[in-house]
Length: 282
View (cartoon, rainbow, N blue to C red):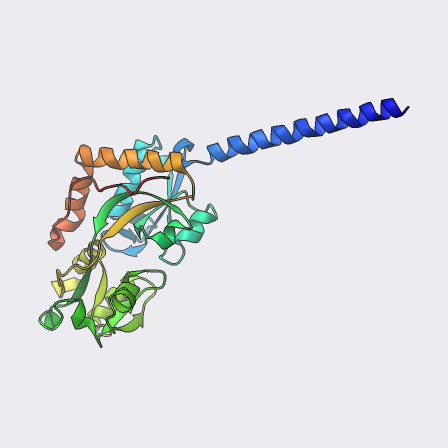
């Protein structure tokens, strides 16, 4: 009886081990399948309030350089236009939406920083922008560089690193004026409630082009490099490499230079048209 019972226990343990083993194997397979590199459809996070980069239209669609870049990345990864869904993100929500699986990729003027790389991974960059300053033409002689922002009203967008780069890193005592996004910064600047907006030159060029009457101008005094990365789930190396391959091809065949010209030449921005140096996927 004892021997039979022992055999029964041993058989039960072996069965349990087999089930656990199968579950582990499935878990590994599922993890691999989670890579964006193997998906037939993609949800891509883009901005909705950045003219020239990512702007939501009245019909709910999105337009801009980042949106076009996202479409090209998806196409070159084998995902057709009908299988790409765009979802609005903000500077404050991008990381959480990636972490929660609400979006597969984020293409939203998303500067690669060491702090952000702790939470998410990045492919690219697909462009290296430079932080600059946008002012009203009437203020162009008074604000010529970052030091001239001392004591002046400067837009601050929650989740964006642009204001801290001026105030904290560069030590310029600008006065923060809150706005939920850069569309709000534009409204405040043209309405006289701000003295300047400082962020990436692509964003500023889009805002300047959006302003009615051409009353805004770029200072053209860049003081940082802003590598725009494609946000991706932390640890998705296969997906990162697939996106990098798509970006490389976009520069090689002239697609990226054409899109830069399309969106930013009217604002007078001289864009770089060579393949950016990638950060690496590991």
